[in-house]
Image (cartoon, rainbow, N blue to C red):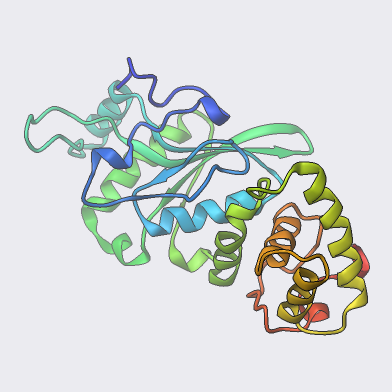
Length: 254
């Protein structure tokens, strides 16, 4: 796995230590390239992908590295010191390489920093073995001076996740629409937003008719603008297309 370059690099060069192909019976990948990294991300649970969508939207996040490997000699030493059984491969009985779900590179007023986050359903926090493995992970990152924490479903805003997931594919250029043409339609869409006092679906449908576009193209253009934050919305509130334009879009900020 090291020879394959797993756990190494950053942004589009990073390769997760664990791929979903390693577990054909479970796991999922995001649809389309990550906004921050320009690569396909792979996750072992929906909770991980939900957290990823929050990171995608956050302006302070610069890089996202999922399934990040910990140095096995170090985790083995920590486990031995604490009297905790190190995770092992059930077949070979060889100690496995432990991973942290997310290493996140953040920018702040002082520059950049990295934080480590583990994702787990809250129900599993009562499992003694889970807590033991968390203690190894916590001590590992503490020894490196890095902030580590656990994220459960309780810390993940459902409406925000659903919004970003809905917008995710629309971030990049729209297929069959040249960049210059998309830019021209985008400017027209911004004018429409300021002009129409109707529902979103009525506005984009009329946009399609006015510019003789395929049905749904106006909505895709709007989603592209929201994803790019050129059309500001409150991302924490569920976006419904039957709502009025002014109830979803911050028109005065366009």
